[in-house]
Image (cartoon, rainbow, N blue to C red; front, side, top):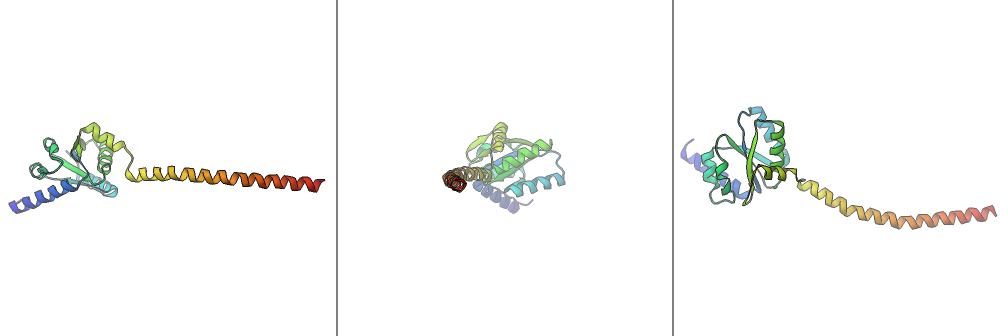
Length: 172
């Protein structure tokens, strides 16, 4: 790789780190091309991305970004998972690491907050933004349906009472 291409790569990585909401650092020793493609597909489906880059270039790109604290994790065959959503990349990386022993989560960061492996796993256990929105809508809709049921109940009872009086007067 020539110097100009390295500078472009460092600039692209720096922009990536500046815009990411979450970065997860992984060891990817022994992953086949098919496995990496599957992982990238899962990441893409959840709105995250997975990238393998040279450690030296990543360390240069980390300068001036909120993720400078990750510098020490870039030793050996590393890759990064990143997303604007603070849960997506962690969810997919941890889920894939459970299924495949060749991918090991080393840690990550959410802005200037550095996360260890347990922190990344805890973040992955949280519900996604879409799941949270669904729960909020469910909570907001539940009282409305209960109010409608309560309002309809007296009318139904009134109709049954009138029907009973009607039947009673017909019988008499």
